[in-house]
Length: 151
Image (cartoon, rainbow, N blue to C red; front, side, top):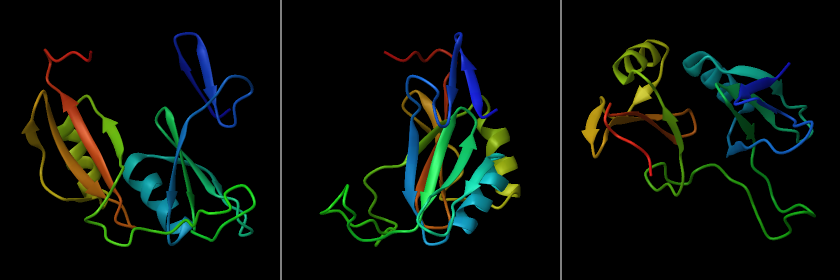
């Protein structure tokens, strides 16, 4: 089953009831992206798409990532065109992964081929660094300081 248990709630993709949240990335090659997220983050590829427009689905820990090639407007988004990053240094959003041990993740994921922009650095109440995926998207990896609380 493709589910995650959190506080007596089951989150599945697709959901049987309630909602599930997934992040969508427009990529140049579905297979290449699926392999990257599977190899680096131990993602579980649930689908590689169908070649007719259906996206690939990848479960990474307690979230889902959808990857698909770009394309022009469709009836449900008549004025929107999806495309990969024009400039990988100009980004308006990114995935954020919180980890318990950033140094261990940095070492492991680097050994699996992750390309880090820098090594982990202290910033505010955390230590963080960024990875670039095969399409140039950045992924923030952060570990909160032991005494840091959210909210």
